[in-house]
Length: 197
Image (cartoon, rainbow, N blue to C red; front, side, top):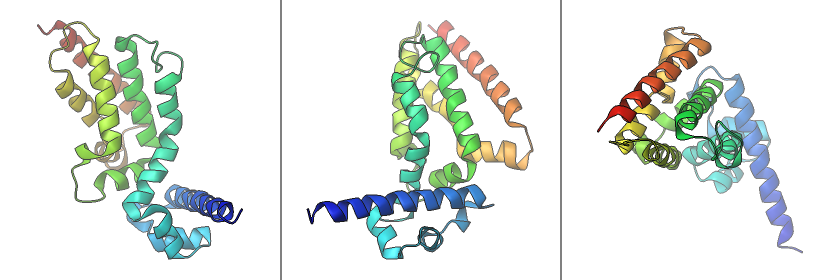
């Protein structure tokens, strides 16, 4: 029984810290404003608890990102068409990219902090590898899938958080117009992909 209480406390603290980070990202104007000290204070715990739960700021960002992304991941893995596995790739690829774009639009500061954080290449991040592998597999199911891996990189580049922030945050494009432009770009790429030989 003594082993279960610390696990429950640790899980409760972890959830409180994720909720605190989530609230701070929702209120902040800049991702840099969400510090480890601010998250700990918002959750009402010491910084040591935060570091034990997540290791460092990138660990906290990855955990919060994964928690927010879970509904989209579930829809892709087991949901109905057009996102789910029973959809044809020509419908599923645009739906996935739109889902990722909507996620980045709704979570701009968090996505930007995660993609800009750390010195490692964003292309080595677990979440990027997951979506790249999934998109590549979808593209390989399409007729004449020439260059599927590169095409997946190109399509994912269109939904990078820094590009979304630049187009929406700095240039002032509306989310609906960005979604429409992404749909047109994706249709063009998929049309070219199908015609390659």
